[in-house]
Amino acid sequence: MIKRESYLKQIDALMNTDFIKIIIGIRRCGKTFLLKSIIEELKNKGVNEENIIYISFESNKYKNIFTQEELDELILNLTNNISGKIYILFDEIQQVNGWEKSVNGYRVDLDCDIYITGSNSKLLSNELATLLSGRYIKINLYPFSYKEVLKYKQEYYNIELNYENKRKIFHEYLLFGGMPGILGIPDDDTKINALQDIYDSIIVHDILSRYTINDVDLFKRFSHYLMNSTGQTFSKTSITNYLKNENRKTTRNTISNFTIYLQESLFCKKVRRQDILGKKILKTGEKYYLADQGFHHALVDDNTNWIPRVLENIVYNELIRRGYSVKIGKIKNKEIDFVCQKYDKKIYVQVSYYLSTEKTVEREFSPLLDVPDKYDAYVISMDEFDMSYNGIKHKNIIEFLLDDEI
Image (tube, rainbow, N blue to C red; front, side, top):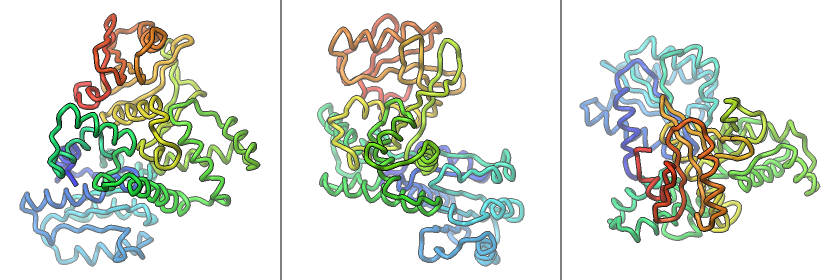
């Protein structure tokens, strides 16, 4: 596995500060490896191994630690005879009830630097936010980007990153995504099996173990529907009717809960729709994007049959990976795929398969031309020749994924 340098750089800047570092990401996206990379960095900085405490709550050694009291007893025993600063790393801490109060106590009582990982967005509960207001930093960890996949291929397989290989690897990325555990798997069938196993582990460990779902088959049918609706306007009424047509009765409230469960497990993200002219967030017309496009290929259908949607999913994940807050844009009766904001920077992004007809060019460029402000606007497609027009920049998708300036 390659070191995830951008994350390590961010964490290095926070080492030995009072901030608790909370790393959140979908199951099997590389959180454990990142923690072990942090341990390696600490040792390189001269920290004694006895001052580093790593606890994985998925290990048999700690699998019976479920309560705040049990955790406190464990930490007291492990730190009792250590002198100097202690570095405590908790992996998948969400299984411990009341861990928030314990961690806050360690921060106050011990000379320590604390790192935490979790696979659920509710890891940062209201209680934790109250206890640690201003004292924690959340770090979102994502599956590998295309750029990281290229680096992996180059380092482990000594592949020359020429034009042909970049496009070949992009095709693999389009199909199988960037979950770290599948990158070293040579054959396609095993990759698909691995992605299915990851999905099953998310369902079992991050959803079924946390919530009461009486009809698991109904939930799985719903998750399949949501995956198949990636990048499409989502309606609770339409999914309810779809399930009824399959003789599976449900309610809008049940569908709403199922959607929340999948979001909290970080399996997908909801993107709201914004009226660009009115500057209002609209109550309807949201879309969902998967944390990794490989799940669609492994669980729904061959991604080559859905390339426009898959490209949109790839671009969305790249934008949030770069720190943008993303919404869907509505301007008059037209749509802009992504309205992206961070700090004082704002961009508009359209995603298309190929700009092969005048109708397609009109559809993708005209909404951007209607935007009254003059922030940077991009159209991203598979086309390899520059089709920039009237101040709107066109990018080939591979160029976009490799361009850190956007």
